[in-house]
Image 1 (tube, rainbow, N blue to C red):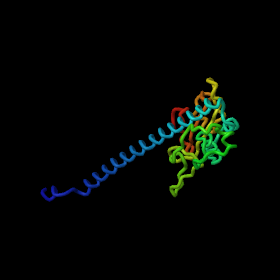
Image 2 (cartoon, rainbow, N blue to C red; image 1 turned 60 degrees about the vertical axis):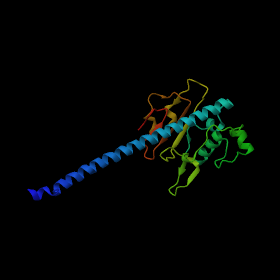
Image 3 (cartoon, one colour; image 1 turned 90 degrees about the horizontal axis):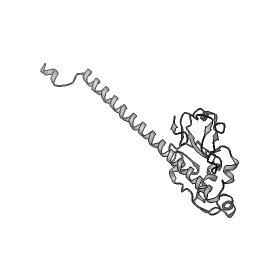
Image 4 (tube, helix red, strand yellow; image 1 turned 45 degrees about the horizontal axis):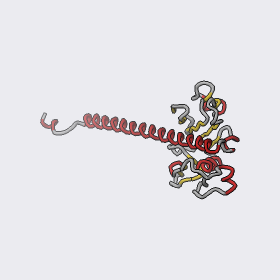
Length: 201
């Protein structure tokens, strides 16, 4: 009896260890869920900033830039589109230098800054360098899409048909009542983040 009270049995140690592992797993799962929710929120805030910048541009110039009018669905994963988007909203080149006179006239005549792009908005390569021609969401995901309709029409509805096929299932009804919709889709296509959808999957 006295000999047994001096230590734990192997079974007791295994039970304690199992409980500790379960608790650790729950803690890490909670941290992971919290981190995911934080990144979703950061992405939604950034997309709201982009929408506000586009609307401010339209109020300033009374029209959309040609770039937005010519495209039904803009893929910002395309470096050329991403670079054009940055030039239009920042009034600068991706390196921070002024636009050429020709580009300024076409894209942002007054050279106004409607949005200041920060390092965390650019794609981070595995070596830690940032590619200032590719925008990403808070998950470092490049699959960002943009649809812009007439911002001066309060009854604008962006038709469901304008969205990629794998995203249409998340849209209730015939479309989204909005002039600007920005959303990102994870590489596996299972996560869609947008302010306009008011939800993510």
